[in-house]
Every structure is written in C-alpha cells, then in structure tokens.
Length: 283
Image (tube, rainbow, N blue to C red; front, side, top):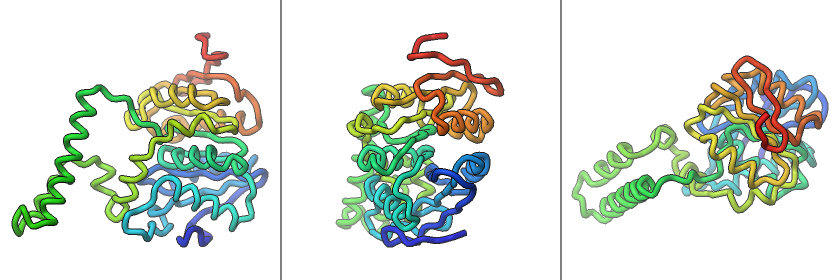
C-alpha cells in the first residue's frame, strides 16, 4: 500500500482500475478496507483511490493537540490530490468522509467533478427542545467537572471522577476515539448547512431508510440545500448501504458516474431495482 505525505501526515491509500479518478473517503471509526469492495466494483470505469483518513487505518493521526476540524481534513485531501497530480476527481464520501467531501466540494469546486454522498454527516439534527436542553446540560456538566478537577476543587480523585463522568455520558464513538477525541469534537461541532448551497457539482445522495446515525431527515434536507442533487433511499438499509445492499449502490453509482439519471429520485426495496420518481413526486 503506497504512502504519500499530505498536510504533514503520512497518508495511506490504495489505487486500482483505469479511467477518470475517483476518491473514496470512509466513515468515522472505519478505514479504507470498508470501501475496498465498492472500489473493486468500480475499477472497470474509474481509477479508484481508497484513502485511510487521518487517524484511521495506516494514516497518521493529526499531530496538533487540539485536533483537526473539517476544513483541515479537506486541505489534507487537496494536498494529497496535488501529490498524486490529480487536478480534479469524482468523490464518494460515507458519513465522516461525506462531511469532508461536502466541505471540499463547497470550498474548492474546481477539484470536484461529481460527488456521491452516502449516509453523509455534516448537518446537525433538528432535535426536540427537550433533547437539545439535555445534551447541552450534559456538556456543561462535563466541562465544569473537568475545570473543577484541573483547579483541584474535586480533591485528589478529581481527574478520575471527571473522566468517569465523560465516559458515562459520551457517545460510543467518543469512548473509542482515544487520541482522536479532540478531532471528533471539532468535526461534530461543524455545521455544513450554510455551505451545501455552494456545491456546484452534480450530487447523488444514497441513504438507508433505517439509518439511525445519520437519519433520513438529513438526506431530505441535503437534497433541498444542494442545487443539483438526486436522492436514492434504500428501504431496509442502515448506516452502511454499500454493505447492506452493495449491488444496488454499485449500480446507482455506475449510472451516476456515467452521467445517467442525475436529476431523478429513487426509492428502492432491498434486493429489487429502484423505482424512479421524477422531480420528487410519487410514482
């Protein structure tokens, strides 16, 4: 597996196939291995680059103690493209990778030809007031505990008590993040809603209607915000549609990357071809 130096990090990637370049960016907690089967299926029509994002797989983690935000990740991908002598490419981004690809498409449109966003992160959920208040209260409680521990106000066991509180209320991703916790906090704080309207590339949104991590409501909002976007909602699929229904995702991507069907919506049942709906109207 080749390595390239980008943004001061050794970045691992795999390259295969032939044709116009396609960069595939995986989700948080995954690696390039997650997307390799999808890349293999597209190698006949694209030169695929499957990248280990910073802190995952064989790519180094950000060296800054306070981590990277989404903009820093996007700069790293641009730097990698420069090293690979890729002026412009198609992109596939899943979850965290979709967040990065969306930011890149909005801020460096000259680098992105076509964009596939699969269960993409980047938009903040519109939660009921009760849940928003609860989350803010927990964040404030944890911050206050850590500050008090740092000042010695909680006694000798203060730091341990503050860490235990963080673990109790933290998400699964945060508990598993280790040295990537500052980066996770930064990217989760980024709200890409103001940027999505600036994406000029054609966009295909692929979502599972059973996705609990990036709910389908985010797909509908993304479609409304992105000027040239089409949506495929896969019935029965969860947060990893390319794992749950690989053939349907592969077929949709092949059609989209070939420039076919870019302005239509599709809703698909598991194991069956998608039924097309034009202009967002029911079939």
